[in-house]
Amino acid sequence: MSERLGSATLASARDAAARPAYDPASHGTGIVHLGIGAFHRAHQAVYTDDALAQAGGDWRILGVSLRSTGVVDALNAQDGLYTLLTRGSDGTTARIVGSIATAVAAARSGERLLVALQDPATKIVTLTVTEKAYGIDRAAGDVDEAHPAVAADLAAPGNPSGVLGLLVEGLRRRRLAGTAPFAVLSCDNLPENGKLLRMGVIAFARRARPRLADFIERRVSFPSSMVDRITPAAGDETLAEAERLTGLRDEAAIETEPFSQWVIEDRFPHGRPAWEAGGALFVDDVAPYEQMKLRMLNGAHSMLAYAGFLSGRGFVRDVMADPALALLVRRHMAAAAATLKPLSGIDRAAYAEDLLKRFSNPAIAHQTYQIAMDGTEKLPQRIAAPAIEALERGTPVRPFAFAAAMWMRYCLGRSEAGDTYALRDPREAAIASAVSSAGGDASVLAGALLALPDVFPERLRSDEAFRAPLVEILGRVMAEGVRPVVEAEARMVERRERG
Ligand code: CS2
Image (cartoon, rainbow, N blue to C red; front, top):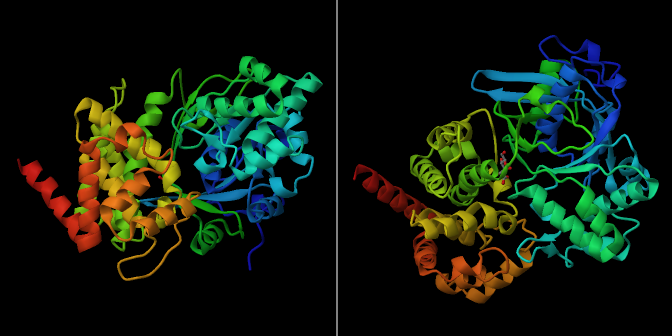
């Protein structure tokens, strides 16, 4: 058996594997990152690795896991080192990343995490915690008091374990100690993620630490950012291939695609790593980039996840190899693009073509079931927002109604063959009761799911131009099955294209 990856064995990694072009141990920690899953390790940690190699600085990362402890133990056993596999059409390359200094599990960190948040050396807190972890009621513009972490942290703000509670307690301690606040950088797929998080942190502080709220409002920077890199969950094959390519065993190896993009608002009052070294783009306003990515990439992803999963397509690449579904993915991207304002320097048609190629990458095993998760958290920005824009602009709405109908069919929790699957959505209970109250009637089901608070805004659910095609598609799916409807929809697109 090979030796395990770690500082002591790093030098013995095979030459084929790239290694940090700097001495990790000689750089201090300047970032606390919340949510140390595969995506962070395939994205921000890699940009930071490039920045350390090119420009140096004390910018290594203390990675925090809010839920699992497995990744923490694996990384710490390897001195924070891990292998990133990049899978492209010309094969797989391995790179050992050195930017993570250490990892902690929030649940068992005790004071350690709060001490790190308080440390003057910490200049930035970054986050990839997924949409549902924020505990923000986006429609109300407030904290979600029913969110378990928010409720727990409001009851005991000095001993927080959730996102808002940790940030507020960290900022409170810094203020008390006379330490300048850290900048907070959200890297989740949420519209204007910095603005949103700022609102949530201030609203939480107003309840838990009223005097701190004004300070946060005045002094804390929350730049927005758009992140992009398709990163499937790592599996046994990932670890096996990392070991083959590096010659070292690695329990924290991950795999990703060659493409990577990071667009960031440059508001870091106390400095930042030279992330441009890894290709990050700094702009004044991220919103148009974010909207393009959320609607064209993530929106198409959600649509194809539901339609694909229900058609028995396990991976995104299988969906793309299915001509009818691939055509509907293309249609969806075009409809999403039509809802966007022009963005200088960006050719939307070329962007869509690139997305189609990325989705088709045969080396990436990205599960449709993984993307299908947390639909109620994703659909508002991915499907509902562009649908409203389409109604206002008079551009095609049907693709969004189609996506919503597929999600609704997915909410039944049962395949046409009769197999059940878990929805994995924070609103699972509300979805289940909507489904059972509908008793198999598509129009009642659509009404009940449209009425779930904060998923489809009133403006959309009351508009017949959206609702009618949605009910029509869902009705046919429930009566005839997913496949005939997908094929009929694709034929309709073909007929339109022929003219
Ligand atoms: C996906 C994203 O799981 C999902 O919902 O749409 O994780 C997607 O792969 C990334 O945003 C790509 O950057």
